[in-house]
Amino acid sequence: MLSMAISSSTGVFDAKTLAAASAISVRHAEPADSDGLHAIFTDPDVLNWLLEVPYLPAAYTRKQVEDAASGRHMLVACGGGRIVGALGLGSYPAPRLRHVGRVGPIAVSRAAQGLGVGSALMRAAVDLADNWLNLVRLELMVFASNEAAISLYRKHGFEVEGTARAFGFQAGHYADVHTMARVRIPVR
Image (cartoon, rainbow, N blue to C red; front, side):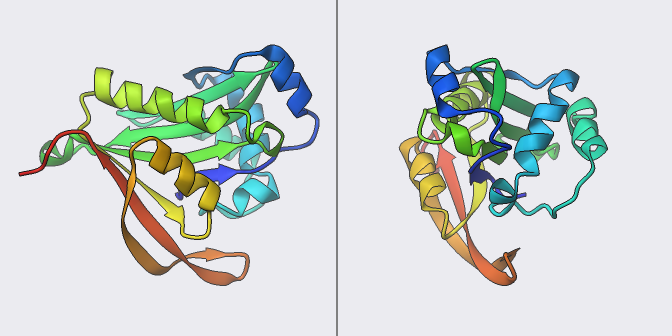
C-alpha cells in the first residue's frame, strides 16, 4: 500500500474544530477507531493516493485494526475529539531484515491538512522505530506526483532511493512511484 494520502474525509469535521483542540495526540489504534479510520481511508481524495480500491466494506477496515499482524503498528492522530489521520508501521519477520521498518499507509483527512497531523504521525513513527523497536532503516513508497507527502518525508530524513516506473494505477492511468528511505546509521 502506498504510504501517504494527504486529503479529506467526510466534511463532518472542520479545521477550526482541530485548531480549537490546540493539540494533536498520537496513539495506537483501538477497535473502536475503525469507523473513523474507515471514513478517512474510503474518502475518494485519500483513496487517490493509496493502492486500495474503492467500496471496501467497513468490516475490512475493522479487521485490519483488530487483527494487526505481529510486528505491525497502526497509529492514529486525534484532534478535536476525532481521528484525523493514521499511519501504519511494520517490520519484516525474516531474521536478516528485522532492522527494517515499512511505513504506510499514511492518511490525513482533508480537513486536517496543513495543521501538523502528518508531522505528528511521522515524529511518532520515527520515535517508535528508533527508540523502542531498534529499527535502523525505515522505508516507504509514495506516488511521484504527491509533492506534499514527499516534502513531509524529506523533512523527517527520508530520501528518494529510486523510482518505479508505472508501478501504481491511479485514476485510470499508470503512475510512477518513488521508493524513499531513512537510514539512521552509516552503511559500510
